[in-house]
Image (cartoon, rainbow, N blue to C red; front, side, top):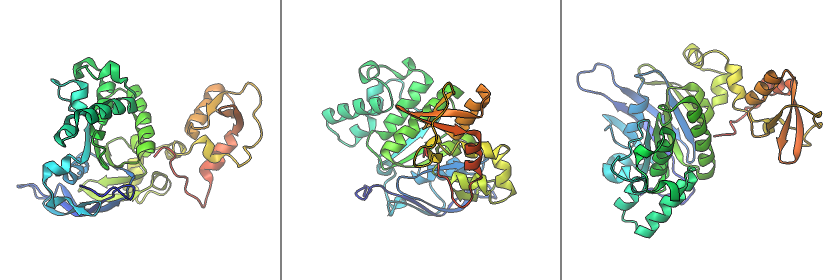
Length: 334
């Protein structure tokens, strides 16, 4: 349906509007933005700002009142809604697995509708279960009720990926999980996105999650208007107005540290070697995690480790990284 030959498809919204009968104000008011191919864009904002409504208009679970939605340059409002949804992955907070179907049957729903062969479907199910960290032999014959919430959410992501859609829509997908499971799912999701590079719109109310996952963030204000659309580092470092600054909240510097990895700040030669006995952090860790290790161990430096290579990272290095002017540090996870 969508031409994915050039490495991905983007999403274009033009004056996208939704008005409900009997309501004076629109639920979504003329939103326009572009999402580049392979980019993960997070919608964040207060309840009632139109995040989910905007996302659902993209796959026409909600029909727009006016405006345009294009995926890969194609006008989705001219497509049959069922055909469109079979080519757009969709993950929701409630997961929505069919309780009477096995995990394998749940994942294979869309490929079956698309007419894939049984062998191809079976191979794809096993591939996806492995991709989301679930052993196929152990889980494919189970039912959703036999899985934990985190495991069910993994299956929900696998099902959305089943037909290899170029675009995915994700509505608070990790919101119903406990904090530890949520962090683990976020890590796994970032790993998947680095490998698959899908074009994703991700809705959340959690700004910490937005800056952790997003390549870019759409901050929506009440009234369904875009307050700022930019990269996380830019929003944290240069909020567009008082509303965005208030939405970010306090400790914006610490939040910016979560966008920078230890390896991002090393000089080409690796710098001086660390002293013996220092606490260790992986070079893939964020500077926020490195600072946490320093505070927890009462030291102003740590040993950054990558395989057999060890480097020295100091508190001064962390401060210098966050104060660097003239360049924007990109999030390494997105």
